[in-house]
Length: 186
View (cartoon, rainbow, N blue to C red):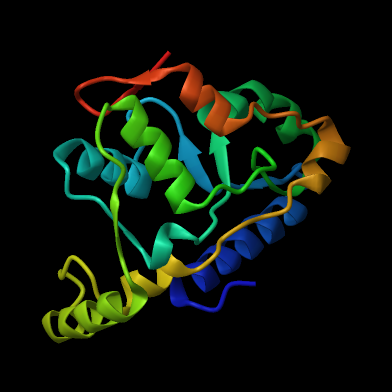
């Protein structure tokens, strides 16, 4: 369950949408998405690809934190079916790779060396220094906590409700290639 302001605001937004739909007798389907993988991935995955490509990506604390992922094409393939059923569903591919697994695969596809590792104690010192500079710092305590924390979800409810059978993200990623611009291609 979410504890930070970002997560709490998402839960509040879900409640507002659900209540509005109930009031207006509309089927409400809420999809909770983890790290979304596809061409030109946004956010953290896009930043990771770019950093690996440029040779400055570093795993923190051995890259052991696990994250749920889902392939964007799977979301698109199921979204109409999901919207007719109603409910709240986590969507993942059912496997939760570590940052180390993800960065190693991307490095391999970009023909780059595997990323180096920063021990957690050094990362904590850098995060403390970053705290002095605020949220614009490349690393601070908040960012470090997100990077080293596990963030995985259970998608059993979606599998049972509408036959959610997503593609295994890492296998799709491995079967494709990442071009020189850092974009995942088919």
